[in-house]
Amino acid sequence: MRLSRYFLPILRDTPKEAEIVSHRLMLRAGMIRQESAGIYAWMPLGLRVLDKVCAIVREEQNRAGAVELLMPTLQSADLWRESGRYEDYGKEMLRIKDRHRRDLLYGPTNEEMITAIFRAHVKSYKDLPLNLYHVQWKFRDEVRPRFGVMRSREFLMKDAYSFDLDAQGANVAYQRMFVAYLRTFARLGLTAIPMAADTGPIGGENSHEFIILADTGESEVYCHRDYLQYATPPADVNFDDPAALSGIVKKWTALYAATSEKHDAAAFAALPAADQVTARGIEVGHIFTFGTKYSEPMKANVTGPDGREVPVHMGSYGIGPTRLVAAIIEAGHDDKGIVWPEAVAPFKVGLANLKMGDSASDAACAKIYGALENAGVEVLYDDRDERPGAKFATLDLIGLPWQIIVGPKGLAQGTVEVKNRRSGAREDLSLEAAINRMIP
RNA sequence: CGGAGUGUAGCGCAGUCUGGUAGCGCACCUCGUUCGGGACGAGGGGGUCGUAGGUUCGAAUCCUAUCACUCCGACCA
Image 1 (cartoon, rainbow, N blue to C red):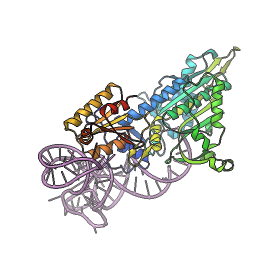
Image 2: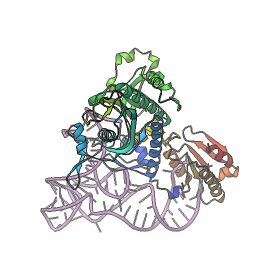
Image 3: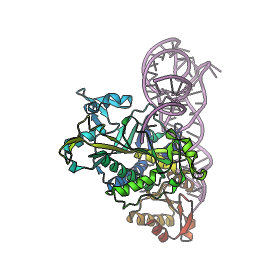
Image 4: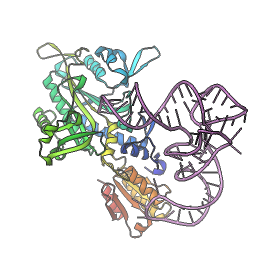
């Protein structure tokens, strides 16, 4: 992509409302624009990151056996009256009427709808287990949205719902998602630690929040140091092997880990001092099982092997991709701007032509740009007629993992500079070597 | 929802107390000189001062209402 033809509305000053670093950087880097309280437009650069986050989330959901569908944002109030939540949900639910004065709502979550879909089509235990998910915009009319997309009213959520014949099956489904979440967050370049959570009004046996550690996180968290070194479950983990899943989950839940709400100071103090980690954390995922809470009132029954009809056992599993984008920035930035993990960077390479109009610089950039594009490497070519300092500042701000800096001085020696955004390491390479370095 | 604040050009702000032709910096456009870490000079464009009423010869400024947004607290992917 040529920057001169792109839409990258960078801000030099920080809008005054941005209080946390991810919000500031997302606004400055032209990733988002606030349209209303807690409601954001995603600009091209932000959308590229959001799409990449979603792609990784989907890959890991699919790997774990979940099946994607897409439910609408608008739901009928009648559906929610079946579960009793239309009255219970309160003011966080955005309620609207259509032209026929029928009650609708903008979905804050989808348990009711997925249960209705399930009961209409699944009648036998032979079709279980089943896990259906979608990635869809949600709306929760928060009293006080804040921190940009970290806590917005309209947000993107991946929500998966599992269906099993009994509690034991539901527990395996839970463990599948547990492992899938560990892999998902690791691939996003995050250190995520599962922490036991309240099941709250939803009830149920299992519940974990996935907390990523970031200095600017909202809440204090406490955990055993070993969690920071735990290896991510491998890509070839067998999601059909309950014993394997259970082993991973046991390992990841054996040691102390708690958010401030559930913190047990005495238990934490009992750990060797060297193993105690106190940090800031951001909740990026939440999983739980809730048994037959919805299947019973909504009559989502299946016939078991014994011929008897029983309500299915369910679980639900949420990740907020829009929040994740902000969380990734909270976990990866410096005083110059964002530092993207390569997996979600909007472009892999930023190519800066320090002297547009200089024939050697133009030709070198054209060659590098063309070669990388042909190789399928995502490159943003800064071909604006700007001074070098502005280009450096822009590239550092938007945080692409690699910068290739092309100017007359280097070209006189036959080299361009390749800089790693994260480490700051620079290397002078020939054009060919620089190109090859960027091609996997 | 309780408390506190803010709405003036794309962004950051001054002007409001004490009414008198709407300003500054950045950004933007033109020309020139520049060009390896956010250049300099000259010229230029852009604002019904959140909205609606009212007071006044005259309102960004005073009064009333209203809307929006932000921050602090209690709740949440």
